[in-house]
Length: 99
Image (cartoon, rainbow, N blue to C red):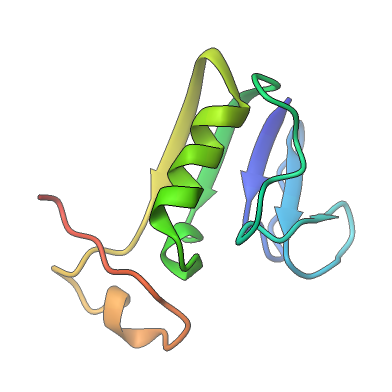
């Protein structure tokens, strides 16, 4: 299984596309709570522009680790504090930089 977390209106073929809001080809899941996938069940996690919206960084990282199978990969992209993107969205609850 490959997860595309926080897909909004951009579902990817070959992925389980996940968001908090329902849409075509989108599985609804609240990533602020325990994730609905079994341990060691996910090959790939794609989390572009989503984890800065989640309030508990430790829960998020623990859930990624729990659901990823051994050798699985997580591709995470967040706006950094070095640019304006981190500060422009009032729904961001965490801020990240390269350090």
